[in-house]
Each structure stands twice: as C-alpha cells, then as structure tokens.
Image (cartoon, rainbow, N blue to C red; front, side, top):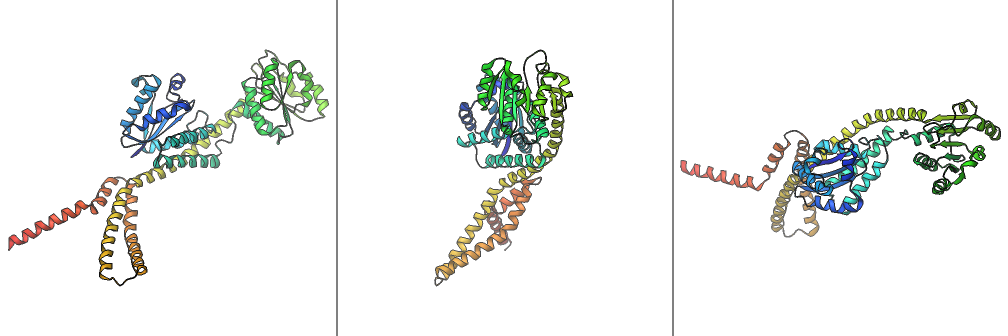
Length: 440
C-alpha cells in the first residue's frame, strides 16, 4: 500500500482551469463515491479551495489510480484527459506525505502562513469521514498533518507577521496605541479594503467604528455589519476629533484630508495621537499632515514595506518548518512500512498461539487434577514466555521493514513460519529416509 497525492493548484494550473475543477460542497459525495469505486484506490479524500483541487489516497498501484482519477476529473470538468493531464501532478510515498504536511501547514499556500487552509483541510477530512472513504492510514496521516501544522505555527511563528495590507495597518495601530479597546475608528470609504480593515479592527476589539462614504447606503450597510455608525460624507469633518484611528480608502482623485483639518482637531484632542492610514491610490491625505506633532500618517507604500518585510520573515520561518516536515515525514514513512509487516507478525503470533493451545491441551489432559485457577496461571505463564521470545524477532522485522531490501527480510520471516516450510521439511525428511533405506 502506498500513499499518493494528485491534483492541480495555483503553481501548476491557471485560474481558468482551476475553476472548472472546483468541487462545491454538494458535489463532494458524488466525486468521493466515484473514487471509492476505483479498484486500485482503498482510501481517498478531496481538498478543494480557490487555489487547489487535490486528491489524497491510498493505493496498491498509484500510477493506475492516477489514470482513473484523471478520467473521473475529466468527466466532472468537461476537460479532455490529455488536456487535464498537462496540469496535474502525482506524488507517491514520502513525497506525497511531505506534500500533505506542506499543504496543512500552509507552506504550499500562495501566502505562506495563511490560516484559512487549516480549516479547509479539516473540513475536507470531515467530509471524507462522513462518506466513509477514509480508513486507518489516511486518518493517521491527517491526524499527523494537523499535529505538524500546529507544531510549525507554534515553534516557527510562521503566521505571526501580517502579510495583507489591511492587517498590516492594524499591526501598526497596535504599535502606536497598544490596546485598541478604547479607540474609535473612522473609515472613509466602504469598499473591499475598508471592509477588510473593519473586520480586523472589530476582531481587535475597538470601541466603535464610524463609516463615511459618498454613497450613504453603502456606509450604512458596512456600519451595520460591525455594529457601528454611518456618517454622511459632508459631515465627516465634525467627527474627526472623535477618531483615534482613521482609515482612508476612497476613489477620490485628490486629497480629502489636509493639514488645516487636523490643526483644529489637534486642539480639541488635547495632544492625544491620531493614527491615519491612507490606502487610497491616488492618495487621499495630504503629505504635510505628517508634519503635525501628534498625527501619524502612513500610506500604502509604507504598509507594503511592512508586508514585504513580514513576508521575508515568513520565508525564513518556512525553511525551518521544512526541516521539521522532513523529520515528521520520515517518521510517518517508517510507521507505514512497519504497518506492511503486521500481517507477517500476526501470522507468526497465530502460529505460536496454535502451538500453545495444542501443548496446553495435552498438558491439561495428562493432569486432570489441576483446578481452574492453576490452569489459568499456567496459561498466563506460557503466554508470557511466548511474548518474550517473539518480542525480539518482532522488533527486528519492524526495524528491517524501514531499511533497504526490506522485502527480502520479510519474505524470510514469513517463510520461516509458513505452513509451506513444514511441507518442505517433511518432503526433505522423506527423501533422506528413502536414501538411507537405499543404502541398506
């Protein structure tokens, strides 16, 4: 049995291909059932996000499984097999294990360290478990993948630094103010960037969010989402003294906020600092605002520098994380190889149990005066002896299973305790007996 990983992602396929393969929640069962019907696939799981559609599985013939998966995905997407094949990858064995660990730890994400993949990864496994397409091996693999992900996030700090413009803005605000729970926020603009900033600010626990937009209805809609207040655009200057943090993200072609606006604000705020983030292009806050003593102005280029520096730090953390992944993949591969010798070990233990049962039966027949307790103690003693004798060869074959030429040692181990060996031994003894009689 071998673990395989196949599919396509943002590295191997453009978005117009990925979107044709994207599997919505209500189609998971259909695809998993088709995968489950493939003779060479024993376990399977699907991970479908905006950046990847990947299938993880267990097979006795990964190449054959890959061909079958191609046909299933071709039928689902409408893409021809040969066209689809150009974008698909196939990893097997240790490479597949490492890939799963990289994905679960966001080392393979477009933004290294992004947290969303953890939930997506968990959800994919939950769906596969609900449809009974994962068993012992993939369950263990996914448990280990989540464990590796947690270890990487806690030991390397890969997710600690902000790598989005809106989140970097909140990081800067925290550096200036520390605790944000008593701070009021004024958002100028109600677009996507403003919404992302509002989301981060709300999670940081700010006191209140004011939203002002040229289209008042949009301001109301965004303010309602975060329990804030909408302000008409022509009234925004009246609220400047209330704002500790101002985030500007509008489509205006020239500055909306100027130095003279904040001269008045400075007096009313009595020296309390104002933090302004201008993420508009072109800029909507005049440069000379930064000349005021208690006003801190950052534009999108300042934030990009923070993001770039944080991305670099994440890449350095990722190199450390990859070493950890290599170690954990090696451990998992050893467990998987040891799993393959379990049938041989079970056969040997069954062989020993048969001998134990026969010998005890003879012993108890010859000693009918033994009571139940005495028989039980003898049985326990014999079991203990068998376990001690078999412990060393069991550990030996498990260790050999992880080395090169493992098949050779496993075959010898199986043959030593195989019923075929008994037949060969008897045949050999029969030939020896005939030879001795011939000599006479």
